[in-house]
Amino acid sequence: MLELVTDWSVELTDPERVLEHHRGRARDVSTLEDLRALDLELLDEVTCKLPLRWRSLGAAEGAAVGALAFLPVGGGLAAITLDVLVVHILSTSIATRAAHAYGFDPSSPQTERMIDRMVQRAYSEQAGKVATQRQAGSAFRAAAGRQRWSQKLREDHRLLAAVEKLMKQASGGGHVPVSRAAKALPAIAVIAGAGTNSHVLGDVANQSIRYAQTVLLSEKHGVPLPAKLRDDDLDDHADA
Image (tube, rainbow, N blue to C red):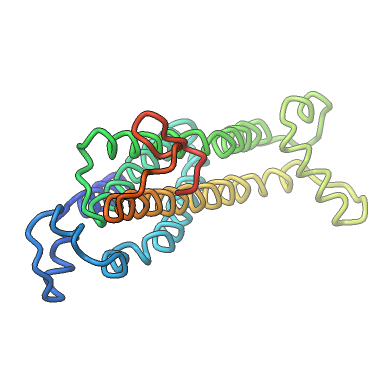
């Protein structure tokens, strides 16, 4: 997983990939700054599929790590920590690709702050996923080998109790064995991971692209940036 993420990160953070795209279409560009002279429509070629691509890859990665959390060796907290690290790396890389695509140097103060905000936004949006995966893993381990329900089990692991309740409703109120309810927990962790990572990475791509487009058009046409997008007042909840 880490090797694959490293490959993705290297590809996304290499400005030459963007320049090669335009050179392959006979456009005279040698530096990122040269890209700013191109029409926005041409620059959008590099990013038009970026959100869809990373929504799809985010779903696959999140599902894989959600499943890893239930491995008896090397799972649990280690898998969840790996997932957060992977999303952090990819969020930084995706925002960097968006900056390159519109001719901006990621090391410039304004662009660096934008990337930092995108990463912080991605980090905060993972809180619900992490909590769900931890609860699912804890309940799965607590249910292992149990034959009967207890009030303490239901109180200590509310997610397991919620699964029991849903299964009872689906079966018309019949008894649901502990083992049967526990079998649904890995699927919940997989869905939480896939759904959250798909949204987070797709959102980072969309927001980064819109930010870079807005800054570029502002510079080209001499129009002031919206207040929320200025250097010292970037808003991580604003849509560029």
